[in-house]
Length: 370
Image 1 (cartoon, one colour):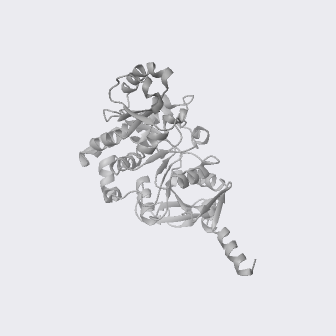
Image 2: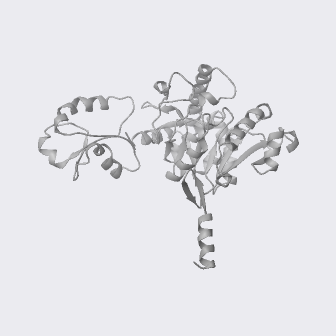
Image 3: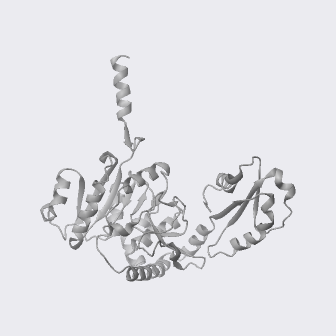
């Protein structure tokens, strides 16, 4: 091997970043964005330290802390740790003239880093080991989808905001029986618990970036604002591939029951205000709800159970757009049931248990498939 060839091969391998055996080429650095007021800066300091301790190659991400000049005239008013991290290029500080809210932080980041994926977090809890690695791997797997670490509420079939009451594990705050990677078409995201990652250029609607409209139409609820535009723009948002118990990492104890009660009130108020500015929003929710499919399969010995099963599916609280029933074409001669509102797929191959999902996913790529 000559010297020139060796150099080219070396440069090729240097163009890769590695994360637990996964090679990443030309990875767009994730911007991890958060803000803080003076009162909560100590919590922000803990959150930042928990990110740096993730032991992820820092070429793969950048922490952006956005602060207001109204609270900090200069860097020397910040805690020593944050000063040191800024000076050593571990974090980037962005001081803005105006007062800050969390939603303004989102808009500032998206405008300044339009060509990067953006991970929005807050300072409610420290981040557990594996948290950042999960987001990076999920983003590589689904580069065009938003990845949310938590859903707490959803729009039900009557367009009311309902809570995932059955979702708690041991009645803990922040730990839900979510399904990894599922598309939740009409769920309300939660930035509080682990954050949400948006791909670059995710929101296209110019109204999303109208800060005055945001304040006047959502009661300053950034979760609702972002969730609403995910629905309006018909974007894909997924549950993260790993579900963390954030209970263990909350920085400051507080009343969970009161928190949820207040949060739901804010969301409901936000919806009423939002509908005044966007009167067709319920129609947008309805469109999203139509993108839910229940997919199942069977074989002759179980065909007689299907009518009862179909009735159970049709009477669920969630609105279901389609029921897909797949079975092997050679079994067609045994099927003599007349069941309404069911789409039947006769398959060329007998994939057995994989018939439940395989052909449905091929035909309905933009749907959430249960």
